[in-house]
Length: 463
Ligand SMILES: *[C@@H]1O[C@H](CO)[C@@H](O)[C@H](O)[C@H]1NC(C)=O
Ligand SMILES: *[C@@H]1O[C@H](CO)[C@@H](O)[C@H](O)[C@H]1NC(C)=O
Ligand SMILES: *[C@@H]1O[C@H](CO)[C@@H](O)[C@H](O)[C@H]1NC(C)=O
Ligand SMILES: *[C@@H]1O[C@H](CO)[C@@H](O)[C@H](O)[C@H]1NC(C)=O
Image (cartoon, rainbow, N blue to C red):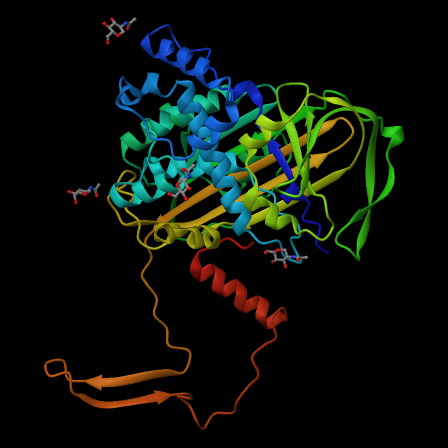
């Protein structure tokens, strides 16, 4: 079964102009405000074109001018952060393949970006540069202050964001790291007494939507940077539960599943057909400055995974027309997704994080990231939507590297000075006299046991 629904569901932040029309309201009247205002005025007539130019935007000297507190509040900085979070989300979505077991992929780009940004605070030199470039924040002066201001603007009754640093008893990170984490990300340190403490914290921060976030911790862990996001919003126009009935959802050309379809006979909807993407785009609004954007291929033969490559949220916003009354049917759903992000980050070029990073901002002892756990959930019903996500970056003492010969190998015995090989060979079976046994089938009891051992030795919590 392969629904892939989540690829077409993007919970977007249209709130308070974070996307294309960012305008800071908290900024005191200074030269930078004037700058912002004139900039806004010149951009307004052509939002679509400035959006595409923004992508590789570099900042002028004037932009760099002034303390980070004020640079981070400029609407250009906020817009830049929004774009950066969009891009990291799209990159991850492109690289997280749906599987038979997990046919839907649901991630929170906000939660993941926040977790990596918290980590970047403790990174130094090359590691910091690599992280910042993956956060698309390497060309933005005052990245952390800008993200701080975006978070401030996002927080509302409907959207809650919580952060924390859990510490192993006896481990103390550098004071500057703790101070910066508190100042920029409101991340208070707390000594961890047990796994249940983390799970209770996540459960509380997600309003009860997420329990049992972690099932284990690696034995050599030292600290954990964690955040949780919770959104609950009501549709600006609710669906009548009496109109909800069974309907078909087509998995592909030949297969379908039965779902509960909600129906709004005259739902206010903004929609258009995007010829270039070969998709239909629609936006359903919540009561308070948030929207659900849905993108569905026009042809059943088109693979929704391919759409993601061409998709730009800012672009969609600039093209959405006025709302009109439309007969809308969408499935009720309640989905969850759990993923260890180490593999996908390694594919994206962040592998060093997990082997030998420079985290000198946190401590002088050699550290590594041993896991990035992400879990998210999404529920759509007649009243509205509820979404929750949590990301934990688990940092451990750099473990002793392991080298284990357990497969056929080549060897040579060489004189170091002259490099003359005295002996060489290939070993296929180091114990030719022993009886040969079957490798356990994947999924059998024995294999599960092996998986467990493998995981605990790599220090990963079970998926
Ligand atoms: C604005 O900048 C000019 C020149 O850089 C400076 O003379 C002036 O005092 C500044 N005004 C404010 C309100 O900061
Ligand atoms: C931005 O930079 C990337 C890579 O450097 C490039 O492929 C892309 O075309 C650039 N985009 C714009 C709008 O200049
Ligand atoms: C960063 O690199 C510089 C130059 O190589 C070095 O002197 C410094 O100690 C490094 N800082 C950290 C925190 O690793
Ligand atoms: C859709 O595309 C993904 C990625 O390219 C591929 O793995 C998958 O098999 C495709 N599915 C279908 C139904 O074509």
